[in-house]
Image 1 (cartoon, helix red, strand yellow):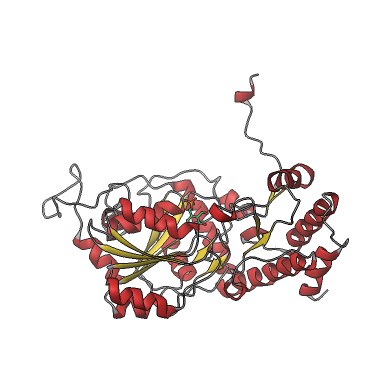
Image 2 (tube, rainbow, N blue to C red):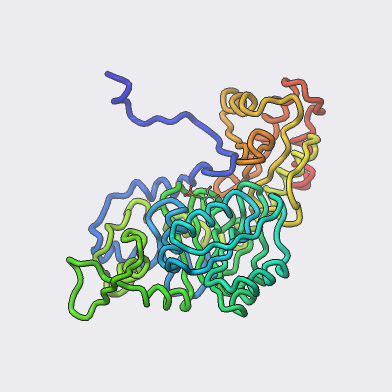
Length: 407
Ligand SMILES: Cc1ncc(COP(=O)(O)O)c(C=O)c1O
């Protein structure tokens, strides 16, 4: 039998990097369920339940809460291509790699993009964003919530009111933060929010939950153009439709709504997974899940500090679920991470751009935000560093975490 015909049998890994992380076994079980037809009442029932569950996860009453098929950036692309018309002004405050992604996608939608830039690892005081809103007057203010590259989260609580004061909508990418950090879509005035499953939601990548305010839906609906072949008398047709068919939220909303417009074939297996991710979170309660991420994230930080590692970024705005540390002098990043995998089966990550090879990012998120995973990772990392000649006191990492747990 040639190697290509062997069944999938991945090695056992503990994924303690910036995501993806190990999926909750409940999610994997849900994803092994048999398919049903896309208009089977069972399926439309699951779709409606998924919408209701994600309203709770996003903390919103938005009717327009659904899944975009594809990884997290599919959600971003769908939001941007559906909201932004060529020439629209978009303001993007960048403080890490994923702000650059928002800029890139907005530019590809033909937006006139205005940037704010800041040192990675810091966040914006609302006054800086307000000044830019006042001078640019954008249609959309697009901000990453937690930028995974730096591990820091931009406070959003004042930005909705500020955006609205200057006539803009507020969008946020919560791929890295949702489920592990406080996020209140309605209370903070968000108009569009997208996320992914592969971090605090304990699932695989491949589905992007999204929620849209009534104001965002109004803009999208005004751009609706129903595709030929399914169009019926009275349906909207435009000569300048949303520039993506697949990510056309006007049509996707009609697919998820009472019309059940025949758009794409829903990725049923991903929907089963996304639904279970939200079910797990809602069962635990969103508040308890955030507290769990805080507890284990804090213990991880205490262990790393206990080992003498230097933290990166504004710690008062660090996400609960991920931390970055400077790689000690003399340690080869690639070799150390390869040894973590080879000897312990544990994966941690480095970062991007100016941080690549200089910092490690260690996640405690979703299914892996647990005491055993924290202690195991610290024990392995400490052993590895001592072997590499870094002067680390034996037991200092695990001791630091245990102290943080209260013993
Ligand atoms: C904050 C943030 N935004 C967007 C993305 C892109 O997500 P995906 O790779 O699922 O498309 C990531 C991926 O890690 C992310 O961390």
